[in-house]
Length: 124
Image (cartoon, rainbow, N blue to C red; front, side, top):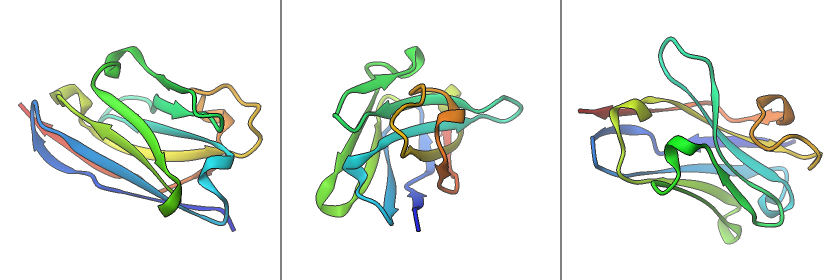
């Protein structure tokens, strides 16, 4: 059974860093596309970053240069390193996987399996 467990959220001051983790079970994390999405209060969920099975990475414009997505194959875990955090990064963050490898990378509809959210709060 494919499962994802997101963790690592918390409260941080603006300018600080957090590393989110997405522990995968039931599949090998290198085999499929992994995406990170977020939903801020009162807003729709949006794509933040994704890493393809071949290692290519993508970021939404607002986080380019500040966030880094990567995988730890030994731990079968994906990560989102978030640096230089801003108040507008406050949101519930979700990881997800696209096992078809054919979906649009930053589209929520491409991802069949989702972890529970982890809350990131950035104080200004």
